[in-house]
Image (cartoon, rainbow, N blue to C red):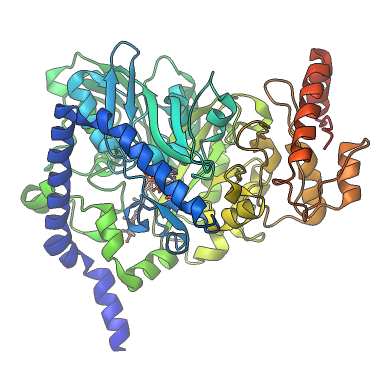
Amino acid sequence: MSEKLFAYILVNYRWVFVLLFLLPLSLLYDAFFYVRNKIIFRLRSAPRQHDARVKDVQRQITAWAASGGRQKLCTARPGWQNMSFRRGKYKKTHYNVNVNLIDILEVNPNSRTVRCEPMVSMGQLTATLLPLGWTIPIVPELDDLTVGGLVMGTGVETSSHAHGLFQHICESYELVLADGSVVTCSATENSDLFYAVPWSYGTLGFLVSATIRLIPAHSFVRLTYIPCHSLEELSKTFADESAKREENDFVEGLVYSAESGVVMVGKSTNQADPDRINRIGDYWKPWFFKHVERFLKTGGGVEFIPTRHYYHRHSRSIFWQMQDIVPFGNHPIFRYLLGWAVPPKVSLMKLTQGETVKKMYETHQIIQDMLVPITDLAGAIKVFHREINMYPLWLCPFYLPDNPGMLRPRDDRSQMYVDIGAYGAPKNPEYKAEATTRLRARGSRLPDALRRHLHDRVRVRGYVRPSAIRPAARQAGSNQGRFSSLLETEFSGRPAANLSIIFRPDQWARILLVVEQTFTRQECQAHQESYSQLLQDGRRALVVRWKSEDDENNNLLGRKRRVVSAEQKIVEDQELRREMETSLMNQSAATSGEERAAATEAGSSTPVQC
Ligand SMILES: NC(=O)C1=CN([C@@H]2O[C@H](COP(=O)(O)OP(=O)(O)OC[C@H]3O[C@@H](n4cnc5c(N)ncnc54)[C@H](OP(=O)(O)O)[C@@H]3O)[C@@H](O)[C@H]2O)C=CC1
Ligand SMILES: CC(C)=CCC[C@@H](C)[C@H]1CC[C@@]2(C)C3=C(CC[C@]12C)[C@@]1(C)CC[C@H](O)C(C)(C)[C@@H]1CC3
């Protein structure tokens, strides 16, 4: 009984702790880093120190290799600091490499790029760039998201219908690989690595800097609110506005019920009608999602919002999570008295949340983004309504170009998707955290329902557990500093469509490891063939299943070959490696354009001798 009471108090009166302890702590934390970053940027000391910091990462890799390289690698950034619900336990068991690189290295107006170290946060970046008259084309919403995390995972924002995902605005990456070497990659230099990095979750190397495209910043966003009163109207308006890639700079949707929502379209401008300026980020202003909801009653409208206020419009209310943490947080009295101090830092909340609150979130909250083709938006919202019945839902369109890499459009055709974000407490009494959403569970209701409804076309962005991937990568020889694994999210109806395979004999990633946890042997066998895709340069990737039998491999490759069995230590087999290289080069030379086209059309995989 007393335990239950304690849990009740912890969950329902969390705001006492948040207000008295976390808010002051968050302010100190922010103030310290704000001043520090300003000083460092002014003194221009960061670029000079960058090389030394990279060397320090290399030194750590060398030390790891010298210690036998048995432990798996991860960054030393503690789990409580990152911007996800998950606190990866693997940080305790893996070899932690300190990639504490937190500076903006250079803003270059001539090349229109900004070069950043991986721990630079979005808040830090906009605070530095906007006064200089620049911005990056995609500014993912939450202040504390980092360049490293967004490159290695992915980032999306309401300008993504025009610019794609965060990786699509990056021009190059500098990485320290597992053999300690430093490699720069871009669309023209080491391009296969460049395209493989996004969504690799650090499995290919440690990012030490990224060069990101800049665009001129405008003072305001002219935001038009379009209230919609039926699902059909909402999904059509949203899709139509998202398709205007030149015309609209920003498109966003907030769904407030199964039949209502507000679509917002924004255009950057330097001219604002003074009567319609709304500084939504001022601390006494209502939470943004509450402000938007009013347009459902009052009809549409237009406002001019200062650009930085627009970028961080959901920050004060952490989308709509603050209403669960400080229930009276949107009350005018609270806003005027303490609005300037919120939100508490997500990382500090995470650090201090305790088991009870954690459990409550795990069982009674859903925090999940689903990526579906925009043509399936209405159907997906219906499924969300039936399975979780929770509002608001966040809609963010994004254009997925047909680039190489893991995160690719279905059917290899550039197309528009929508990120549907569900963050909050489901109202459906039958909601069961695990059964409804579990990525791995075959019979899980939400993914299955979506799959059925969307004819197997749904893709779910789930957090991939590096612990599930890295042991396999190590077995494949990643501890040799050469092999790395790529991965697919654990839940996906059609993995083959999402993957491109990297095969680069002379350098780093030769094996794509796909961890398929829910597929039958027959399905894996079928995937194996489709994974072997045509590379840009005309070669084919070789794919060997970890547990594939010799005859299965023979069937796949269909001609005389040596079979690599799981037990063979292929990494160490120099001779085999040379043979593979020669074979690949020969094949590349031999495969004519027409043959390649025919092979692609037929979806077949040209065998590679190994
Ligand atoms: N609007 C948006 O797009 C939003 C996106 N997100 C998600 O949050 C994540 C970003 O959160 P954030 O806290 O910044 O990042 P995290 O610390 O959560 O890092 C995400 C992944 O990137 C890896 N990583 C980070 N930095 C490096 C590096 N320098 N070298 C190699 N690997 C690295 C991490 O590896 P390791 O595990 O070894 O630390 C981890 O696997 C994104 O992945 C995104 O999916 C969340 C909210 C909003
Ligand atoms: C693609 C987009 C825009 C995603 C937005 C995701 C956010 C809504 C997520 C990211 C991190 C996140 C999971 C988090 C939380 C809420 C939802 C967040 C902010 C909170 C603050 C909820 C309260 C929890 O006790 C705790 C503090 C652990 C988490 C921390 C991470």
